[in-house]
Image 1 (tube, rainbow, N blue to C red):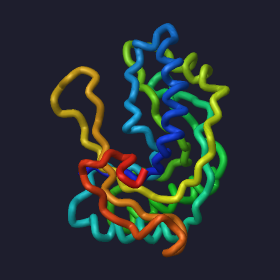
Image 2: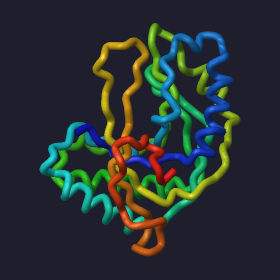
Image 3: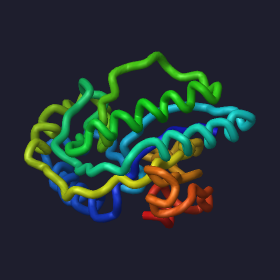
Length: 209
């Protein structure tokens, strides 16, 4: 299955960002971008791609350990940017050291579990909002996000997410994301509960918010 580790913003943070994105989508040229759905908004920590089933026990064990070793930290969605004209994204502010540490530990957990990973790159936290198509420039939309500063929340869990790519060939169809497992950050007893597997019907926000 196609997997990645992520931090998922809570509903309130998503709603705030959705209001800003609605204004972006009213700007000239917005129809030249392929906008992502709110249900898929997340900060990727470590993208693993296709993971063999036989590696899942070791992967989940090591991710749980990574979560236990990382204390909860504060984060907020802040500003925006773009990768060329390929992707428009919202950024993060607050506990970036904690976010980078959790990303590094998630990447290391996957490697030690035997998951083939891309070469190490400097972690750049971002939440993808849209992807370019038809030569539309993302820079003006990123500039319009400069003043956005969301409400702070506490990142209290690490989430393993499954990505299901579109297969129907329908124009504009989005990937579907399912939270597979969640682990509270910090030593056992400090987080919201023992790591668990989610019902596949849950979206990335899942029943745990």
